Length: 155
Ligand SMILES: [Fe+2]
Image 1 (cartoon, rainbow, N blue to C red):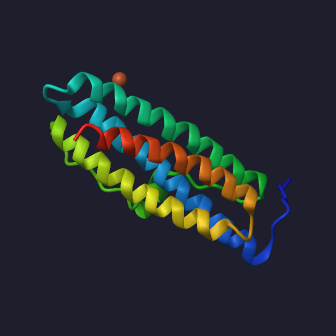
Image 2 (cartoon, rainbow, N blue to C red):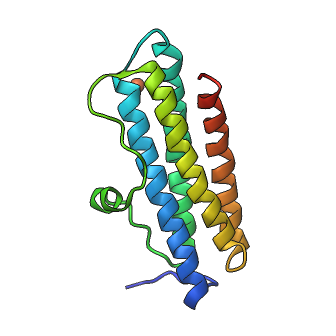
Image 3 (cartoon, rainbow, N blue to C red):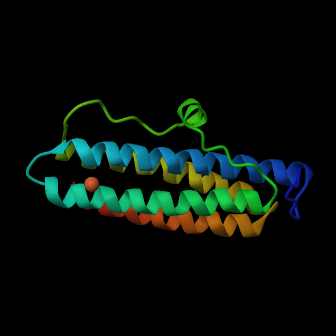
């Protein structure tokens, strides 16, 4: 079987693999919870939030692919299987059923705060072992922080 090799090995590769896998799980689940809210939101601010949640889905999906393919380029297998994501996610789950628009804003402000905290830990962890991966994670964090601002601004 052909295998992909990259410039990292040993501990450096392990640290980078953990950072990229953690980022992958966060981004996949972020896209799932954002779609859940996109469908179930109700209230006077339905329309802008319904659309904003799809912007968040697009950001998360785009970065999911970038993060997974960065892992592959380093010879690391990304694991985006549903069981893996369900078992590993730290993303707060919205309740089942209708979600009031105000609750969506509060919930997604919190969810994004958590994702940002974990992404910044990954940025710090990859600084020395692989600044190229760190650059990818910085770009992800920048876009997640922009989304965090736009949810906060509606409180
Ligand atoms: Fe839709």
